[in-house]
Structures are given as structure tokens and as C-alpha cells.
Image (cartoon, rainbow, N blue to C red; front, side, top):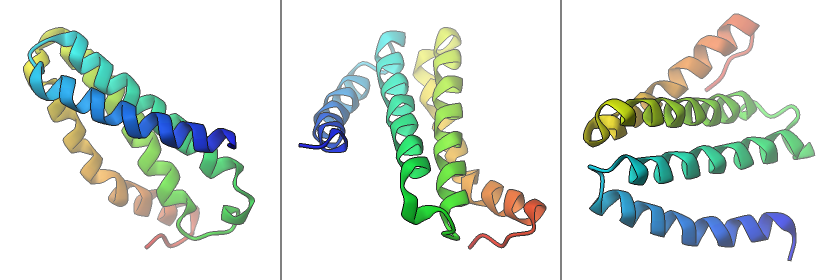
Length: 116
């Protein structure tokens, strides 16, 4: 089984576990950390796959994918930071992922490319 197949199988099981832990124990910082660090790791692996795939070199959606994954990594780090202050409300940092498409369009416009 290729390496990416291992990650797919691992993350499928890990996502179920981390979601059930944070769903039941969101008031504890460690549960939020588990969820956020796993999401950041998943985004990092996804970003690496986007960068390595040769078919996506000139794809118009590559910038959107990269920006979305970088925003997910940033909001995961922000969530870990917020969990030190208020673990119950730290997961609200993920709402910022809604702005990723607008950010990708803005960056594309700055670069002179249109991102849909």
C-alpha cells in the first residue's frame, strides 16, 4: 500500500476518535489540543500532497487549495492558543475557515490570476 494510502486509513480512524473525544470533553484543553493538532497535521499532509502532485502545477484551483489548507493550519494553531484561555470557546476559531475562499480570491487578484 502506498504511503498516501496509509495516511488515508490512519486519518479516517483518527478523525472519528478525535471528533468523539472533543465532542464529549470540549471543556478540557487536552481534548481541544488533540483535535487541533490532528487537524493541523492533516492539513500539512494535504498541503504536501498538493505541492507534490505534478498534475496540479497549472491548475486554476491550486491556489485555492493551498490557501484553504494554510488557513486550516493557522486556525488550528489559533485554537490551541485559545484553549489556554478558554477551552470551551476555543473551537470557535475554526469559523475563520469560512474566509479562506475570499482570501484565495484576494491573493489571486494580487498575483494577477483569477481564482474561482
